[in-house]
Length: 244
Ligand code: ADE
Image 1: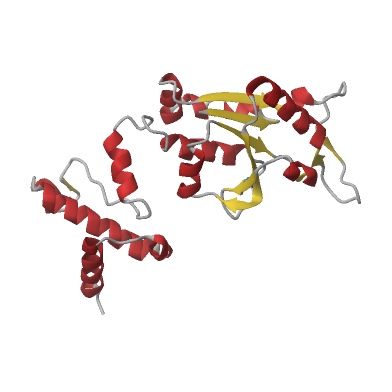
Image 2 (image 1 turned 60 degrees about the horizontal axis):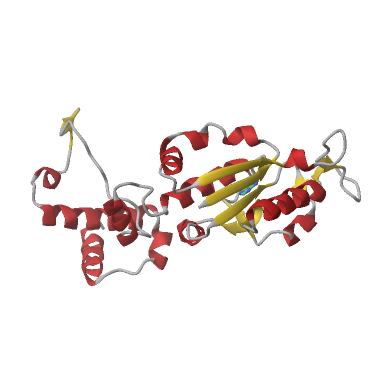
């Protein structure tokens, strides 16, 4: 899968993509990056990429022409990608969207900056995506968030394929609690079942704890979750165990 990024600040992408999961995915040949500087596509001597807003008002607006030219160059050299504009006005990004994007051969993430972007850029892109209801200084950090989440969904990236099987099985639930040595730290004990060596009991405990965590911490996630018969039984037990 190819990630192209159109940005005025290509340096933001230097180190995050050269660490950890994304670095390994590049080394395995599963993903590659094409970070393009929009400024290189400005056609005046000053490489102007922003201008004052029509109608007046504060701040500057990112111009459409450099973005259009960057896209035209991309399409000529690599074919047309799917264009995603990062913007606080977009649809909220979630795991389901990450999975959907992970099947696309070439994604182009378009990063807006400054106080705004010429509205006509919306006509050039396929989708507009937000990473949450807050305003960041630009689309670069959201683009990194998408790249990380999408990369994790590509088969072979996480190495341990079982972990993605586990994740898809529990998709929609929060993770069960994890512990490692020591088994007692300042009077805080690891749940004994995890030291029992009984794999079936451990599986059941983990499932119930994942359900419990989700019910109490993120009850909204339960609306979209389809429980198995075993889950239903566990949910009943969790409710019965609740004080009061
Ligand atoms: N650009 C600025 N804020 C953003 C957000 N929350 N999501 C995506 N792009 C953005």
